[in-house]
Image (cartoon, rainbow, N blue to C red; front, side):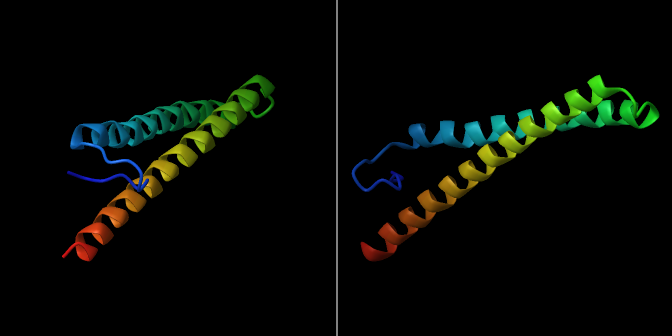
Length: 93
């Protein structure tokens, strides 16, 4: 049974799955936003005076940065959890 990074709480493998799924959801959202941003940017390169496109692209860039940050936080949390579990396994031997 995997253990959480929080030494006060143990959890079952069923509780680990949503964390992985969450990272996947953020990554998928990020990819969707990038696709939309790239299509808007292609339109913007043809009409660089279109400020509404520029504002939309800026808003998407901000959302992409937020998603990227969430993906990175989830990745680090997974690494900490697996590192803590590995330490527990080696110290319990």
